[in-house]
Image 1 (cartoon, one colour):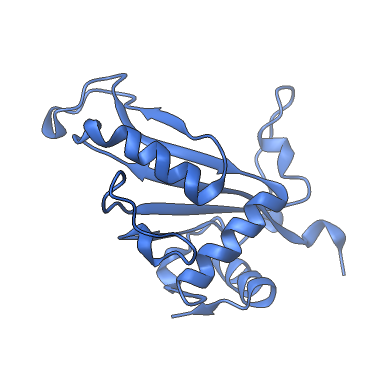
Image 2 (cartoon, rainbow, N blue to C red):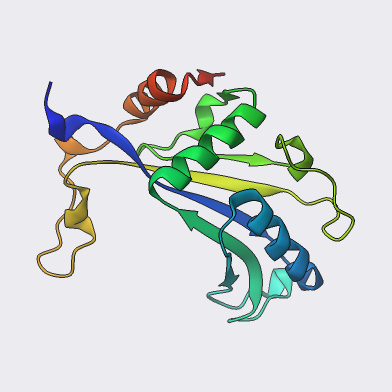
Length: 168
């Protein structure tokens, strides 16, 4: 088997959106720290959205990006909370997938905290192969060739094999 075709988890991003409710920022930061053990970063609005009454540069959420073993441990824990099953529509055409929780209480080992209240979050997982660095490097950036991209079916098969995930 070709080693360049091996798929691996590149990063796991936990995102808590606040929207207009910016006064819950402290509780979102606390929740992100409890779920991951990492320090979260505030996400800012990139442009003005009158519909949502959000101005450019305003805080609209909190996120934590995890890589390597920390990402794998957190992903296994969150997938276990989902019953090791997610929808097939959660996978995109680039091999990435997303899933969410309406309440953080669904995650095992996390108890209700009145300081946080009830809050949900989303998890985004990015899968990569060896050689994907060419799309991020500073000199001579290139697109990933079609033959090397991760398809939806390859991502599903990888998750079934590595994480014993059930696709609904």
